[in-house]
Amino acid sequence: MTGTSEQELLPRGELAADVLPAAARLLGCTVEADTPEGPVAVRLVEVEAYRGADDPASHSFRGRTPRNEVMFGPPGFLYVYFVYGMHFCANITCLDDGDAGAVLLRAGEVTSDLGAARARRPTARRDADLARGPARLASLLGLGREHNGLDVTDPASPVRLLAGPPVDPATIRRGPRVGVVAAVDLPWRFWLDGSPAVSQYRPGKVRDRSVTLRPK
Image (tube, rainbow, N blue to C red):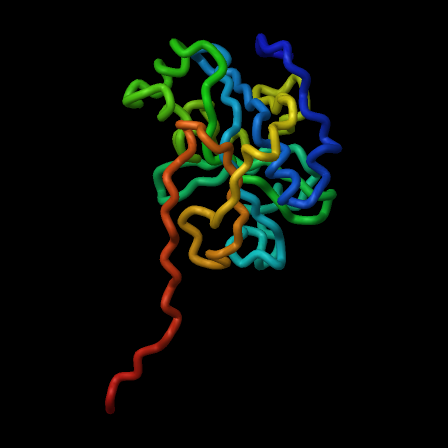
């Protein structure tokens, strides 16, 4: 392993599951990345599940494309995409190879050296904001397009998924996903109750697909 953590990697087999149990399992796990400032690690406290053909909010809903190919497996790989022309967001694939599914990493608590984390995100007003939200989390860990397709279960990978002890189910909360414009009511967002790093919920705006007819 290239980092300094003594935690064990999460076995790939634990991610070869449906997106909902995989999302719950990722809570409490640690994502560790090698950055120019040194290893930076976050304990995941908020995630969102996205599935394939039955989830219209998923990038894989309309089938395999060059952009979403990583979502189709195998499990345990990073799916990184660019959003709003400004930010990267990171997911970890799950389900069996060939079945599209991934879990968005929404927020985490820094467990590594805070000095390195603060140097990477000097505009954060408080430590709880360092990885609060998917774009901040990806920025803190230095994740970009070049990390798309990385195996986070490989000890030689520059980004690694470390197993944490399973969290107490009583501390897990569920609700709708943030900002989606389809399947807006599915409770596929999971977070740990009481963590100050959990991001604020913002409902998406459902697109109006109706056509206004002009009078002739």
